[in-house]
Image (cartoon, rainbow, N blue to C red; front, side, top):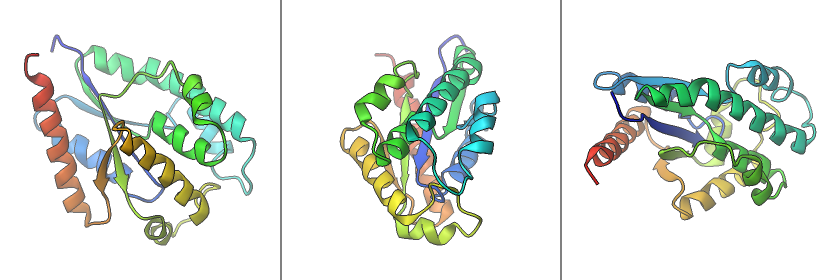
Length: 202
């Protein structure tokens, strides 16, 4: 392909099923497109540090440091995974991206404007989808050991921030309060429609 690829991100609360949906989407897209899966925190050095030291602590540390680390990881992720894939014309689907920083660090009290300035470098996704599941429902799904951010109060605040971006048309809401296959079907339909529209000459 000579044209630039397409960058899609899937967002949502912990336990909403977004990772499963992102992987299912890539699997279906591979039938007709060159599609790849990626995620944040990334598999780079900073992403690994975040996973090891920031997500599974008993108490949440400095939210400012957290925001800086995620922003730094995003630079690494974009430069080493996202942009190279896009330059080759691939469809790259990311499980979490910049909206996760807005939602999680914003819910923790940081000003959204500051977080957005911190992430000015972030390549804008072509399509950003919010898999919306009620906070009470995701808490029931999180049977494993919960991370520092996985509590009902935090998840409610996070959802509120996500919904603001839905209202601003930066995120497209997808009802995740349904069986996995139904959500996957609608996500695939949404993405295929977007790709078809994008391919039309302007």
